[in-house]
Length: 69
Image (tube, rainbow, N blue to C red; front, side, top):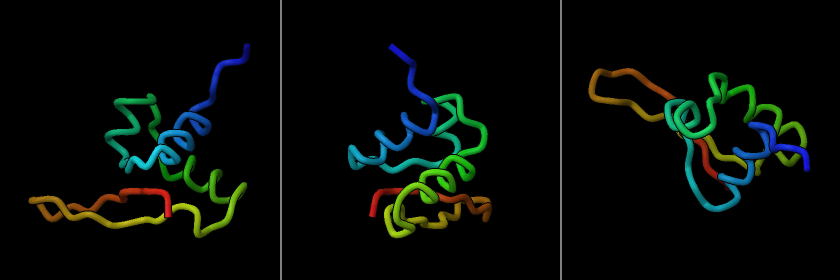
């Protein structure tokens, strides 16, 4: 049995109704480039499949959070 790729794991995680951000992707899946994985998932499916929200933390830094649309 072939092991799942990061893209497959992240796609399944989103399909379960979860949201994901870069730190969570790194901790759960060892993924350093979440935006690239999201880009590849969007390329395979409809662009409306994943919604992006920009989150601003206490320090004023922004990061993307993704969820299934």
